[in-house]
Length: 393
Ligand SMILES: Cc1ncc(COP(=O)(O)O)c(C=O)c1O
Image (tube, rainbow, N blue to C red; front, side, top):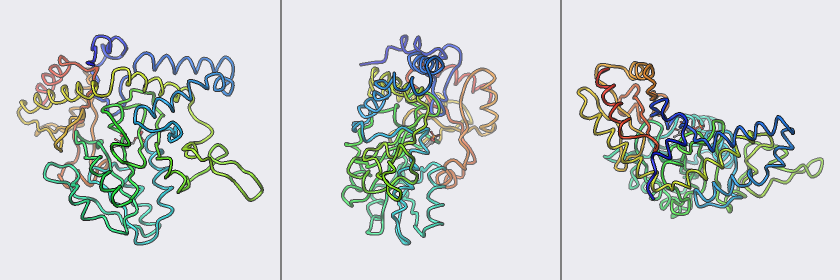
């Protein structure tokens, strides 16, 4: 199936208002998602929050089922959380609590700052060592190097699929094959890839996966999820428990939920969770293959357009490149470009060194402009973007 671009834009109230190339920040929500969110908030105001939740239980359960279908997992392997970071943290800190001094965690050069901070904190606290797997000549994680680095002290492989600062797509299934062969748990940060491209946890061979709602899934802010393979979930405890994650069975005893809901909290943004489910159904309606084809086509057109502007340099790494396009200009700082484009309602973001320090330091980059495209963007927008940029740099 191909994307019906007119329908996609008609469903997107913001599409004609702004030129939105900040989908890796937060994408424009489509109308059905906005409606689901507002309808639930209205119901809460009319009958009460708990009562509204009970009344909409099937929709809420539908979110778990939709996410499971999206990534080829099971509904009871999904936990709904408020963002990708907390989802990742629940898996990471939970599993890391079982590590001992001298144990190792292997990660990628593309790692996101919040993950790296957690590595550093755990390393400081418990004497665990963090080792970064080098990238190959193209800039993607070197699977050969990873193979060499796996030994019996490695307790986790934690890799970012698509980094925050560029079009790179790391070879997740090859990493999964190495992790499986070594029997090492594999945590995949799929924050920028879920919703953008087809994701199949079984084909990838990961054990845990975290993602957010507001980016390529086009869901509301303040939503995210964690998927943990059922037979692994029981082998470690969440770092925090509440009365939803566990049951207080006697004065000195408790039972932790068997399903992935052990990683959730009782209180949450129910409207957001329901609307996230609608966003997932909406994405599945277009098809992730069709979405990724169009995103890749638009992003490549943008890379070509940018490369033709004197002084502009595309900074994306890797062999397979996705919808995140990053660049610098010789004479104009990324922040200046972002500000000047913003005045024309053209949205990009700036990715600073501290967000992906391993990689940016290696490439001696202070910051890059990030233009992240979605399937609802158009060739005309790409052309306009390039001509406005040309005037600026
Ligand atoms: C690669 C990557 N991982 C994790 C995150 C964190 O996501 P969230 O802000 O939903 O916690 C981001 C956010 O930009 C990201 O780009």
